[in-house]
Image (cartoon, rainbow, N blue to C red; front, side):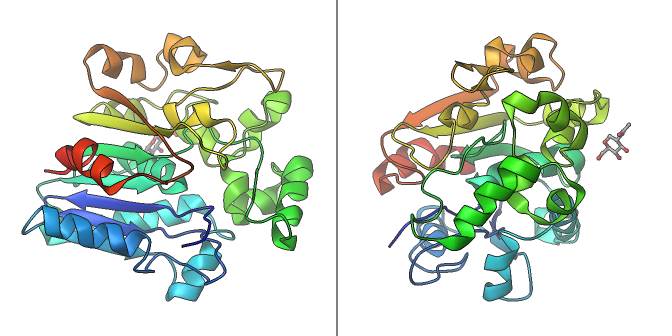
Length: 294
Ligand SMILES: *[C@@H]1O[C@H](CO)[C@@H](O)[C@H](O)[C@H]1NC(C)=O
């Protein structure tokens, strides 16, 4: 399997859900959500390990090609509400479910937890998610790729303009610490779910319904910048070098999202693993993540 600016998928139980939010894989083989070598492979492994598990696969877009394109060009808020509808309509999920999101799928799933409390999400597992967004697109998706250069340039200049916020997925979690005001004001997705403009008490209450919120960070991640975002940290505002942890952030200190309360209640789990973005060993996955899916 080639690289990877990877996917965003979701897995859930009781039952469980395997969403091909499926964005965004770039490999020479045109990997998409349902490529058996990638997320399809994980789905299969989980089905083998947890007999009787129900894995729901949600694809955004009508087919795999569209799905891959949707990884770049679509409105995340709309995608989230589509997924909410799909979950609400699945009788097998009525009693609740566990969810697992890979890469950008992780922050999208957190939006599902915050906005759509029914059916209830129990554990949320974020694998290489970008909860404070990204500032930079290293190795995206290959040095020679035109689309990547275009996107990077566009994001630097115009991430917060209307068209990009509505249509370019990466713009919707682009977090520019040098233009914090613009980010707060115009980021339609991330600034909203991270309570940057106002505190929506509903978001706070819903997120705290989770039993566990597990965040996995990849220690050699060369795709996500800064990697601290995988544990809900980010660059300190006003510069682009020094980072701060979740616990050092205003979000936590003012507890705008309920994360400090969840931390005190032992609901936040921070895991780290060796490897580049989404490159984990099957044994590690089984030992560390599967227990949250039972
Ligand atoms: C808070 O979030 C809920 C759930 O998405 C939404 O229905 C409501 O309109 C939001 N409230 C405000 C003030 O934005």
